[in-house]
Every structure is written in structure tokens, then in C-alpha cells.
Length: 397
Image (cartoon, rainbow, N blue to C red; front, side, top):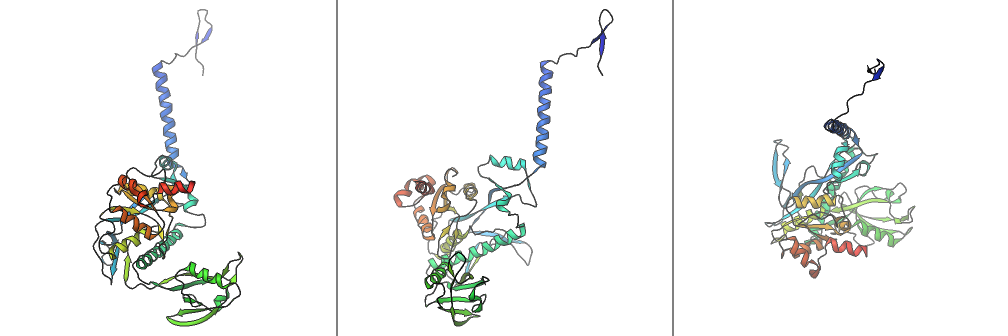
């Protein structure tokens, strides 16, 4: 409806609305912005985002204690994260911290866009596509089972690496886990058989067994001594060439260990293989007179194999910030992760690159003369200690 008034001649004239004052215009503009912000906030909060967020998770001192569920009392009880029974152990004074990454968001509980946008501006967090952590053909339960299996295997490998370093013979042989459909070995071997020798040579790793098989060649017969239900047997096996042209037996394999005493690692609700190196260092410290940490607060991460090789892990940046959060000035990182470390090192943290258990122990020995990150970094090069900065720079040349 349009409103009119009349002029002096009585003719209708459209009535002009009064112009808004500057204050009124400012109020209207501000109200519009507030309304838009409210609508945007509601939309960002309510709309699910196909991403997950990685952020620093809990830290655990492998030389300290953890709380676990007591099945008898249904209460929490404190136990040593690493306990050793049947061997002489020694007191420790420092810390060897393993770091974890906490993942928020899943196909069953999706994040909002608001959560994602905030995390984009937080250097301690990483935003990843949902599929990077939760593949479409894998549900949360399957992933948890895989992470648990990786953790168990990591613990066994860490024990093997540590005890091997201490001079123990821990490899019983190579265990048979399964067969390829076309494998002729399935007519000779059984699952859980343990291969102890091949042509008189004792393999101590799956890779060494592969190398021995390759040397024999496709179609050539090799002799093997195996254990079946703890009884020794001599068998003949014939490698073949698979579709990729590799000479194989066509078996799934793993290392069977025989530890001389009991080493127990307790860590609930943590999965994956990335704590292996820190487990191994913790075991060695408990078995070694003196103190390999020199009383220092040291953090680190990295997978480990029974031969003591340290491998790369995920979430390295979040673990760096996790170390900073507990006041740890020193960090041992897999050398293969150094390209992801450089440019993202928190203040007050010295990051050293390691590729083997021996190299990690060498860094700990070097740190016995240093109590802060600055002095350690300054003296690293002249002592042949690798930092991630140096490793990354060498790789880019």
C-alpha cells in the first residue's frame, strides 16, 4: 500500500519517507552483519565436514607408570609401562616419552566446518580428508583392530631389537602365516611351521629369507629345516617366479621370537607401530647399569624392526608439539620424517634424526653433556650428530 497526501490544489502527492539518520543507518548495517554472522555460525556448526583433525595426544614415559583397568576390581591401577621379569634391572632417573596423535572426526561422528576452519589456523593440528584416515571400505572397528595388531607387533619387534642389542639371541625362525593360491609350498608346509634354516643358512628376518630364496632361483630345489609343533623336520621347497617376476615361495611370513625372559609392555587404548623405538630404548635403559638418559626429559617416535632399523611414522608435527607441551627439550625423529619436520619445530625443541637404534643411543650419549636445546644444537655437527635440519638440507641438494 502506498500512502499519499495532497498539495495546495488538493491533488494527491506521494508522501516521502523521512531519510534515516547516520546513526540509524549504522544501526541497520550492524544489525545486518550480526544477523549474517549468526546465520553463518549456525551453518558452520550444523553442516558436517568430510575431514578429520589430528592434534597432539597423550604422552607416556616408557620408564614410568601408566593406569590400566584391573579386571578383578574394575578400578584403575598403576603399573610400570615396561616391566621385566627374569633378568636384572636397574633404576632409571630420566624420561623417554612416546607421543601420540589424537584424531577427532569419523564417518560415524563427523566434524562441523567450524571445527575444521579453526584447526586450519592452528599449527599444532592437521586437517586431513576423511578417506586418508578412514578408507571407504573400512569401518572404525576394522581400523581399531588393525591399529591394535600393529601395536602388538611393534612391541614384539621392540623387545627383539632391544634384547639383540644387549647380546641375546632371540630369533627362533621365520613363521609361516599363509600361502598364495598358486604356491607349491602349501603342499609341503603348514601354517605356524617355523623355518629355521634354508640350505644350511639361518635367516633372522623375513627380508633375509627373501634374499636366500632369490639366490636359489625359480625352479631350483632348496632344503629347509623346519619346526612343526616343536618337532624338527627336513623338507624340500621349490621357489617360483610370481606375476611380477620375483622369485618367491608364495608364503606369508613373520619372525618367530624366543625371548630369554619376560618383557611386558602395558599401554591401553593406543594403537599403531610408531612407539617401537621408544619401547626399545626404555627396555635397554632398564637393563643397563647407569642411566642412558642422563636424567634428561627426552621424547621421540619411530617404528622399529627386529634388526634395529627406525622407520617413519605419521603425525610427526603433532608429536613435536606434544613434546613441547610436556617441557621436553629433546626429540628423536626418524630421518625419513625430517622433510616434514623442518619449518614446523616448536620453540625450545631440538630435533635429532635417527635411522637405527644404535644411532638413537649415540644421540642419548651425546646429550649427556647438554641440558638445553640451544647448546645441543650448537654442538651437534662437530660431534657427528644429525639434526633434522641438516638431513633435510642434504636431501634437497
